[in-house]
Image (cartoon, rainbow, N blue to C red; front, side, top):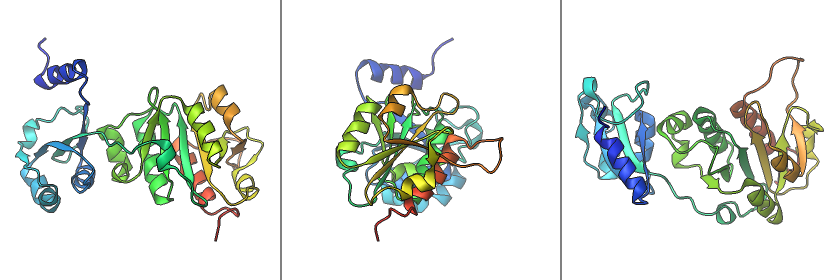
Length: 262
């Protein structure tokens, strides 16, 4: 079977070493990307209905939309993608280095993800990180969710504003954060103490919350590099939070802990 033209072009770009692009979809994700001056925007497909809803953002972005038939939407999206008549091809954001983005100033918070690969979980974590004012969400380049349309849609706009940094070696970046003054707390069900008391025991200063993938949890090297391991207390003996919910609870606790500077 003949490959679609967009697949051939993407493979050609990979061979030539060009930066691969990302297709964002959905009214909310596309609007936020259009309004983000840091985004390099390449191709925009809109249905007439979506064009009317996004006219202001399209004008700000200064990009010409290609009007698409909703029955034959041309963007190369997964068949189940709920695009709402809007899709935008962009280049991935470059937020810079961890050392620059996460330079501490008081009770700063960063979130570190150890092989969390589900884009919906990462999108939800980015959304919580923005709500609670985290400096960045840090993940590995491999075995982690890349910037995708599904991630952006779940993040509900946070992908455009919340730094999402991909690093080669998570343990090395953890050590660098510790040298900058961060205390790193790993989240695990068998932690030595509850997250609240663990945070309250710290002096004012920057904190890193380290979460592993559901099931495997924190890898041995990641766990050993943490300064302490804490748990989120449960009311009963059964049930647990998924990683995105655990991140939201931990972020709330870190933002409102006793160690917070006033």
